[in-house]
Length: 568
Image (cartoon, rainbow, N blue to C red):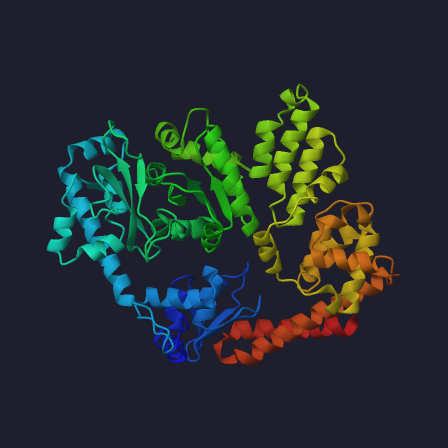
């Protein structure tokens, strides 16, 4: 679908940039503009400015800039078209497409209306169901949680009659996933959990069987429909997304009841899978709100297998995935009921990222000596399979070091075994998104410091001492890679580095590098000159939006930088 250019322009003009950005961060007035701490990088002094007149924003710290669409793209981690849809949904603005490229919006709206009406029916039916209420009471689910999650009950029959009375025909019911292939009600005698999209609209259902003497599946989800795809949905995320973003992490559980129990006990940065494995789509969705994931599955072999499968899907997307160790026989629901929120949070504090989590389970120091060589190799290969999906080679090297220490095997041997594994396509896509400037296009001094550090690892303390200004330069990501890996000879660890760095070092490692002092002096001049230009730009572009104190601070900073640059 291609959005019409007129629609995009109308969207930009109709939405107040201050209102939209202000729904994410706290803004204060600065003359004719608004100012805030930048949401895209860490800072103590506000350098993020918005111009209500132009509808644009600009950060003088990280140089993020653009309009409402680019702001939503960055803060929600969306592409251009997704950001437009997001804004239109947020402000209830109908989408408009290029002529000849249409979508039946009215049908989608009618499907959502049908599902919401069904949700109301299930809620009303719950009041009359002794069996469903007895089950919820036995599971300790409060009336407040039932209301918040809109939990209901599907009786033996009655939904079709109810919906027809509300003006919804059977064709709509079928397309909404409420009827089976025979045109009968799909959900019968089930506790019903409405599945809502990020905007709180009901798009599907999950139903738990209430009768024990039945061959029907324990859980039954809505089929794929024009408004519902399991592979793109997480249960409860509409309620918890803001808490996830605020706390910086999410707890992922396996089912509706685990979610309900944790949510009820005050663990409100939680989401649940919809009875299926996690997918790359879930990784992309979660990354909009956090990069830190805690997998909290049942404490049995099935739960362990689910955690490993989930890690192999989520980690290549650049997410940090931790395994939560529950006591034997426990699940998230039973644990939080018996031990409470505080003890549950302590489990999170003790959680390790999945490679260490797996090593702790399979390579315990007290049992590893009793393993045969074949058993050791099987377990090592299982752990290497897990490490291999991590897109960050620095993190990989950390886990290689951990495995080396546990086994007494040289790091280089483990690393060679690790990097013989095929890298996944999704991992490659994430790596391609890294904000690195090709090394060969950098200034000579920047290339020089990389070569010096490659040949002289004893320069690492010097780099760390000057990190505050070096991090402003395009070369810094490459230096950071090298700082985080221990080496005596660069050739021993070159396979840990990103493709750009390893290729550069392979081709140019033998080149004679310049004097260290001369290179550092040139880099310092470059960093000072860059900051001086930023201060001048800020004074020029936002002069009327600065307070007198801010203007004086910038003028003093400008003078100091100019003197520093002159004497370098």
